[in-house]
Length: 548
Image (cartoon, rainbow, N blue to C red; front, side):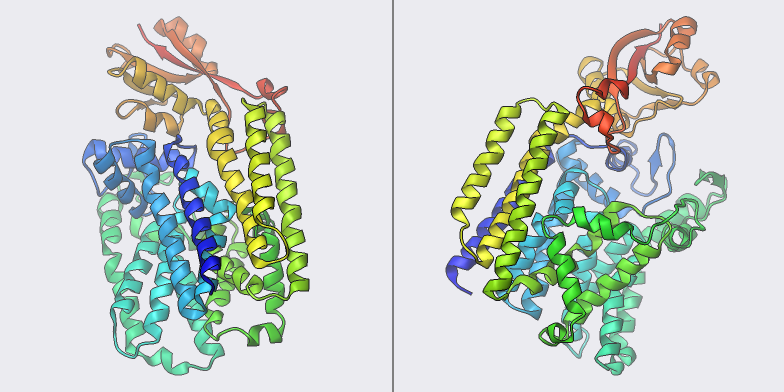
């Protein structure tokens, strides 16, 4: 690998890491990110690391580890958007590091750098830096486990790699559930079968690894048992007597897959095929081509046998996701390390004729995405439209001046440039504009600035997780007027309420409107909302009122 080539990759990785930093200083988006942030906030307020609470009630849906990480960050940096997003950002960098190490161990240093660039510049990694959920954590821990277990497989004796693999696998389980072991271990099982390494199934070290995983997840089992199994009177998942341990091992994952759990869906076998098309931009078309090439025996014969671990792990998980009845787009992020290395393998050493086609293809994607951003800028009515378009054009011109000709460097440079443009556009312009309509966040910030000692409350269906996080203290929830009557005389009670309840609060409780906010469910964007000319048709008024 030439020094100039290595320098190019290092510069691109550095830029991708630096361009992700502004996302840490933006506000938290609803629903999931704001919900998880508010639960972690409650951990700090109640000095309770064992129980998960939301809206004053016991909460059972996700394991504890993401909340513990956010709570530790809150303890260090204070309760803020930055503190909530920082662990996720670091997890993304850790995932990139494992991608690099795995690819370097199995292939070459060049492929390691290429895989890392592809991973960091993929759209859903960029989005997850802003919209923090559990998936970036599980991606880092799961692929970390794969990396360490692959190292352990090369060593006959029990090693630190085996122990660290078990630690990371346990962390992945404590992020999302026991299902993730299929992704981590499935690739190895298929690899051993296809390469006829049947003796691996009799080696004690692998059974020790599984035992260690279950030992390391005991903190999660303990917390669930003490919060739910020891207290059958607790109301969770719509009923009493729910077993937290059973939910963790079955309902939270397999219950969703078989559609027997408390959370159900319809499922679409093609869902993740078209989800990958946009989520893995600008590399998705190249990934599809790479997968198609895997069907050719000649292509597979040129790869190291350890490659089976990658595509087997990705295939098994992708099929399970596709057959599941409960599907969400961000699930696919779990497979991006595998996708990145598979894509890098395909494009790394292509002949000039093939490379020319790929460069043209990526150039077309760059142009189409740029046109889309231009249209969105004016269609949405973003402020500073001239500045936005000037930045985009300047970055593109710089890209086409620096990355010229037909080469792998040109292919990578143009692709990463469009990712950097997307980061600037999303973090500095689009997300801030959209978040103006996240009324819970806007109301919480306004309340903290103007009534820092006010007693925040939410009435009826005016719930907003972002209000729970940004409002001072822990907001009180009132679901009926009978509940409200017990607290109405409380001094400085300020309520977040929808317009449908406003008139009765004015009439019966002498409510004073302090501030009005515009609301839209911004994670479900519609053409009517995106169009600045029709947006007002779908906006709802939300109010902060003070009772007298």
